[in-house]
Image 1: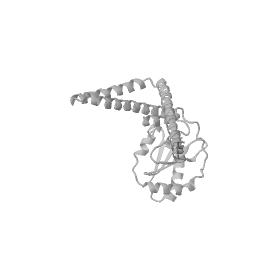
Image 2 (image 1 turned 120 degrees about the vertical axis):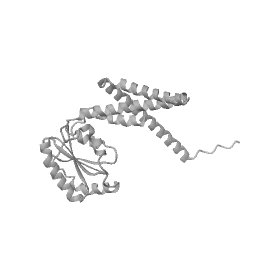
Image 3 (image 1 turned 90 degrees about the vertical axis):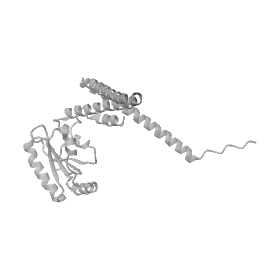
Image 4 (image 1 turned 60 degrees about the vertical axis):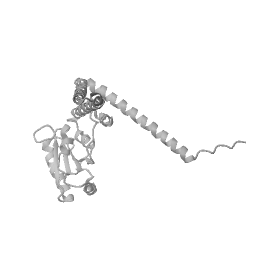
Amino acid sequence: MPAKPAPKPVSKTKDKEAAKAAAQERRAAAKQRRAQFLEAFAVQRREDKALLPLMIGVFLVVVGVGFVVGLLFHKQWIALPLAITLGGLGAILIFSRRVQRTVFTKAEGQPGAAAWALENLRGGWKVTPAVAGTTQLDAVHRVIGRPGVVLVAEGAPHRLKPLLGQEKRRVSRLIGDVPIYDVMVGNDEGQVPLAKLPRHLAKLPRNISKEQIDGLESKLTILAARTAAMPKGPLPPGARMRNVQRAARRR
């Protein structure tokens, strides 16, 4: 009588099931990213008539330059696939930048727009929105990062100046000689436009270490009781496209 085959180890079966489930999740996530990308592309194309010509132009220029450079070294057919890849990346970068510009344009001037922009910063910033505010929806937001503490204000300048001064005094009593910067969001002289706010913060000098950031955040939690409640307000139209920008960077 032939011997029965030995049963498969339970652990190996579980590992295969887990790997299969993980692969299915990755495929579902990739499918969702593609759907988001295509949806955002369709929306942006309707609003931005120059988008498609710019993307095609960048793609063709990069491919053309790559082919010519390869031709000079008699390796044009080797250089062409690389040029096509770089051209595609360039076109996606154009798309991502123009989506971002559209989002910021639509958000500009809306209550809570600066808070929304800050909460979507990349690079380890610690953001506490609306640490001070008024009933007219003026607000001061606190950001902690490598530069130190940055107070970002949005609203009417004549109401924001006393708010900024008060918040600076409160913060300085707790953080000692750590630098404090203040930024007022707007389009007037001395203000920073909403679209340029992330870049403005990124250009500030690095004064403290990453370890100090966590220590500062702990100290400033005692200021979490806000002096004025400010509704975050509706999400700026097009803000959901930030997920698409992440998807575009992954492609």
